[in-house]
Each structure stands twice: as C-alpha cells, then as structure tokens.
Image (cartoon, rainbow, N blue to C red; front, side):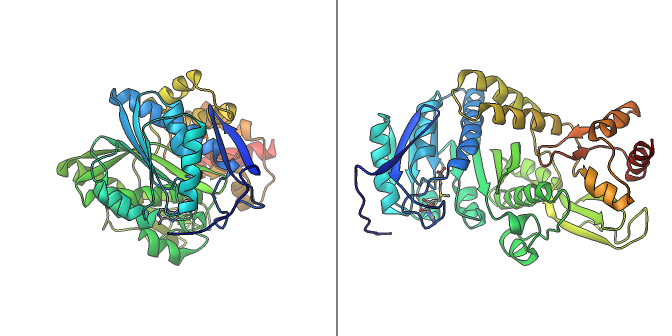
Length: 393
Ligand SMILES: C[S@@+](CC[C@H](N)C(=O)[O-])C[C@H]1O[C@@H](n2cnc3c(N)ncnc32)[C@H](O)[C@@H]1O
C-alpha cells in the first residue's frame, strides 16, 4: 500500500518499553486510523510475549527466527530482537509503507541488526515464506481469523504461534453471527464468556492447523483488557493431529440454574435439557476442551522474568501465577455475584467460599478473568449449598 504522510522529524513521540526506545508521529486517540499504530496498553501483552518467546527459545535450545506479521511502529519485533536471547533474525512486516518507514527509523535508533522490514499483505508474507519462522506473531486489528489458514500452511513444525484477537464481542458471544462466520463456532454470553472466547479461538486454530497435519499445544492463554491472547506450540504428525482433535467439543449451559457440562467430540450428541432443573440448555461450540494453560511452561516464564527488565512485571507475574493455578482447574468458572443473584441472596465473602470448598475436598481456584471467579469441581448443587449456608451464617 502506498501512502504519503508528512511529519516533522522534531515532533515525534518517544516511548520506552523494556530496553527499547521507539518514535512515532503523535496522535490523539489510539485507533486503526493513526498514521503509525502504537498502543501503550499493549506493553503488558508485549512484556508477556518476551517471556513466552524466551521460554520457547530456551526449550528449543537453538537460535530462533521470528516473524512480527503486523509490525506497526516495529516495537514488538525490535523488542524481540533486543530483549530475547538466542534470536537470529526478525522479519517485521506491515502493509502500510508509513509503518515500514518508522519500523526502519526505530531499528536504527535501537542499534539492532538482522531485522528485515517487509511491505506485504500478511497472507502473502506467510505464503511467500513457508517454513522459515520459528515464531509467528499475529497481532492484527480485530480478528486473526483471516490469517490463520496462511499461518497454518506456512508455520514450521516445532514452532510457536502467538495470536491476539480483539474482536471479543464476537468470540465472547455479544454478537453470535460474526463468531459463526469468522470462527465457525457458536458462542453464548455468560459469566465465563471470555474463557469460552479463548476456547472458540483455540478450537478454530486446532481445526485449521489439522488440515496441514499440524497440531496445537496451548502454552498460555489470557483475556486482558479488550483482547484475547494465545501462545501455542505447533507440532506435526497426522496421527497426533487426529488425536488432538478429540479435544474439540461443546459446552452446554443452563441459564435457569447455572449448571453447565462439557462434551467432547465434533459430532457428539449434545444434551438438550438441564440435568438439575430440566430447563433448555444453550450451547457453545465447536470449541477447544483441552488444556489452555501449561503448568511447566508458565513456571519457566515466571523464572525467566527474573532476568528481564519489564515495566509491567508485577502485573505480568500476577497474571502468570493465576494462570498457573488455572492449569489445574476444569473448564468454565462461577462468578460469586452471578451465583448470588441466581440464589436471590446477598454475597458472602469470596475467600470464605474458597475456604469452604477446600474444606470439603473440592478444588477452589481463582481465575484471571474476574476477581470474583471460582473454578471448582464441586457440583453446582453443592456449591450453591455452601454459598447459601455462608450467606445465612
Ligand atoms: C494492531 S496493529 C499492530 C501493532 C503491533 N503489533 C504492536 O505491538 O504495536 C496492526 C498493524 O497491521 C497493519 N495491517 C493491517 N492489515 C494488514 C494486512 N492485511 N497485512 C499486513 N499488515 C496489516 C496495520 O497497518 C497496523 O500497523
């Protein structure tokens, strides 16, 4: 894309993230219409990416090549080269030639080498470089769905795919049809819809990669601010891909009593009636019912953080420690307020509910999705009884 954009070289905004400084033309509001896109809120996302890619690099134990497919100001790709050990080269791509200009300026400012700037439509970039990158980072405006087939085709075996989706209104069920169109999956709105969103995106990725006999192993997933982010190890093998697709299934939810159940299988018979109150169930899927947090990988990320200068480190560690806990938990969670509204009682103390569940031998795990979320293996009837008893006493 050819654009002409005039700016005053002495009137650029300068920001510092980690060990990296970048410049770009000042704009009023973070939006896709900014001449060069930079979102300060995504520093947290980039900090986490540094830890995830460094952890992946350590496990692979060789120099890695990275593709920053939607470069913007270049901050992501430049940080990856400057702040991650064992990176041989980084390709920074953007369809905007103005972005490319600033990517080059910022590469120079940071005095980094072996970074190449590309001006390609993202799908073309991937199709023209099959099997070249150990890490592909997909951080587009809105939905990544339009780029997943090219990524699935192009990505190497034993690689890491990092994917951001900001179209959470589709993935999390505010709008059903766009989710069906983009992710071929039906969502529904619920207290745990951000987890469902992650599982829908993961299911779409798993199915897309399987076409190319590649399969996914999710290392970390989180829903933060306005986006969802997944870090996925990609491996190759037809049998393993078939096996991995057994993680595709459905979540069924009762709006009357909050009961939910999961059923694995692409064409599995889904129950229509709630087992507790016999109301009609609503369904989400097909989606990923396999693990969405990897305990060992997250532990290694936490360890890796000790050697990194990250401005958002405290927040990153808080998220990683909660995701680590979640790695032991079943799918979906309850929200204390939603539960109490359903029971028509005022809410007892959150910590007391956790304590009581643990006393009774159930799992009681906090979630990163919401401060009042509880992941548990207790049946809904038992959980309600505990909450009611605590509310009365
Ligand atoms: C959300 S921004 C990327 C932000 C960047 N990754 C960061 O961390 O700051 C999306 C970028 O993708 C570029 N873009 C939009 N559509 C594209 C396409 N089809 N192919 C390649 N680049 C595209 C835009 O010019 C914009 O710079």
